[in-house]
Amino acid sequence: MSRAPFYLAWRYVCRHRLQSLMLAGALALVAALPLCLRVLVQATESAMRDRAVSTPQLIGARGSALDLMLAALYFKRQPLPPIPLKQVQELRESRLGKVIPLDVRFHAQESPIVGTEIDYFAFRGLRVASGQMMTRLGDCVLGARVAHRRGLGPGDALFSSQEQVFDMAGVYPLKMRIKGVLAANGTSDDDAVFVDLKTAWLIQGLAHGHDDVAATKDAVLKTEAGNTVANASVRMFNEVTEANINGFHFHGDQSLYELSAILVIPNDAKAEALLAGRYLKSSSPAQLIRPSDEFDALMTTLFQVQTLALTVMALTLLSALVISALVFALSFRLRRREFATLADVGVSPWALLMTKFFEISLVGIVGLVIAASLALIVQMNAATWVRYLLA
Image 1 (spheres, rainbow, N blue to C red):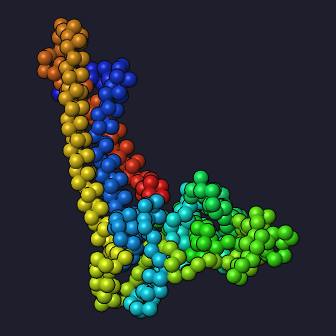
Image 2 (cartoon, one colour):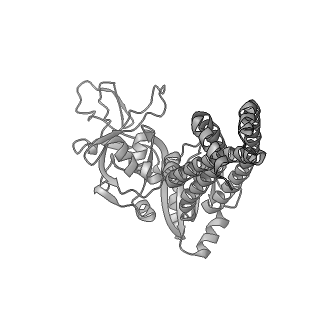
């Protein structure tokens, strides 16, 4: 076969490269979208599934099980009713498994503050990369991405965010001492600020520290029934230091202090079944969920949405192909004189037909190369992008 048709097609595409690239780019974007969507969905599923599967059971207040899972596992802001601390005490008395309380209601400049116990770090396989674990009230350790993004490390300080701006009786933001930075593990833990439960309750305002009222001149307004009422001259502490730590005290019944959720690692299958049965009763103020089950339900819904999206994209691709065919047809119609001239100089009708075929093929091949490149870029970066999206 003569190479003249391919040469003519190649010269035309090169001569009108901007037009050809725009057409190829439009086709590439429409073709790449379904591929990129599938890659991102798979990366999201993989990133979330590991964390859900590794958490046997989760206990929280009755309500949305999905909200409970998202708040407790991925530290997302959810309208989650709290549960009392006494639930932890009851679970520990049952000796059916390891119990890890979580309080994820507060933030530090958009980073979630996670109040928990030391057992959480062993459960998630977290280790300190620099510094050390928190040692007293007011200490915190940072996830790897939080520390990197803000340029913070051991010895620095971080303020909690005020949750209600117009709360006239609100609590001052707490200045927390950063004791360490955790090693990255590619999960939501990298974007969190970890404190102990008492520090979380201090942020909530269930504890406070202030100057010694008795030693403050003219501070006492009155004393009755063993309680001392002071005026506004008494200085409240918004930071815990070695000098003032003894001045902090908690109020009320600590068994009623609030938590967001409780992670439970049952001793065995029997303990898991006993715990599940205990919280099946509708009279129970709390609910028990298996995060893996809730995650599967979430993925089922997500795949239904994905199927709908892929169907719409397939129709869009079909429309793009039809429009592209129309563009080529109009282009060939406008170039009738050019093709007539080629016929006059001896180019056969078959060669002219092949020239048109090669033009369409070249644009299509360029479009496929662009689409494959986009899909490859998304596949190479999907895990990183998904981690930031889930953060």
